[in-house]
Length: 253
Length: 94
Image 1 (cartoon, each protein chain N blue to C red):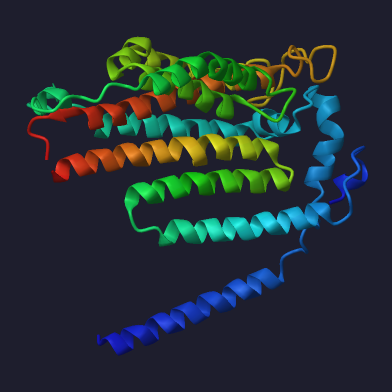
Image 2 (spheres, rainbow over the protein chains, first blue to last red):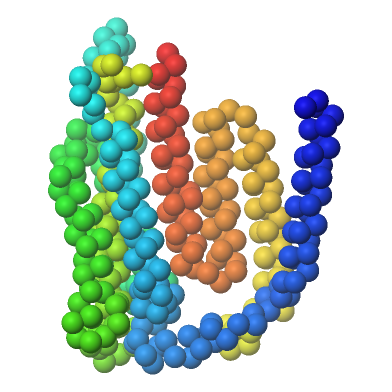
C-alpha cells in the first residue's frame, strides 16, 4: 500500500469517527441539564436511609457497593501483578546501586528535604486516617485516605533511606494488611447473606445522628477496610518500583 | 445548576459559569502542553501540574470527592510511578 492510499484510508476513518462523534454529541442533554431520576431520588433518600451525610460514600459503599468491590479487586490484582512481574528471578543476585559506582559519592539527603519530610509525615498520616474514617460525613473515603496514608510512608523514604522504608513496611506485613483490607470488604458483604439479606446490604445499626462518625452502619466500616487495602497496595507497588530503581539485579536484561 | 437554587451561599450569577469556562480552557491548554513536551522528565512534571488543573476542574464542577481522588492519583501517584520507571529505564541504557 502506497503512502497516498494509506492517507486516503485514514482520512475515511477519521471522517467516519468525526461524523459519529458529532452525531452522538447532538443527542446529549444540554450542559448542566440532568434528565435522569436516579440522582434526585438518591439525594432525597440517602441521608434518611443510610444516616450518611457524605452521599457519595453512601452511593459508593452502599447503593453501588458491588461496583466498588470490583474496583477494589482491580487495585488488588494490580499490586499482585506488579509483585509477580518485578519479582526476583532464579539466578538473579541483588546489589545496591551504590556499590556499583564506587568512585562516586552518593549525594546525601539535604537537610531541607529531610526536615520537610519529617514535618509532613505526622500530619499526612492524620489527614489520611481522617479521610478514611470520615467517609460517612464528608466527601472523602477509604480510597483517597489510603493513597494519602501510603504517601506518609513515601515521605519516610524521602527523609531517610530505602532501607528505613522497608523496615517501616515489611513486604509480608504490607501484603497481609492489603489482603485483610480486600477480604474485609468482601466479608462484610458476604455476612449479609446468612441473615437472609442481599450481598452488601447495610445491616449494621445506623446510629443516632446523620453524619456522626459512628453513624451509617457498614459504610464507615467498608471505608476503613478500603483505606487499609488501598494504602497497602500503593506502598507495595511503589516499594517494588523503588527496589527496581535502587537495586541492580545480575542477569537482568 | 439546580442545586445552586437551594444553597445558602450567594454566588453572583454567572460567576460559576465564568470559572468553569476559564478552568476548561486551562485544562485544554494543560493537556496540549503535556503532549507537546518532548523531554520525558519534564513531561512527567507537566503531567503532574495537569493533574492539579483537573482536580480544580472537578472542584469547580462540584465534585469534591473526585477532586481528592484526582489529586492523590493524578498529581502524586502516577507521576511517582512514571519517574521511577524512567529512572529504571535510564539506568539500563547506561
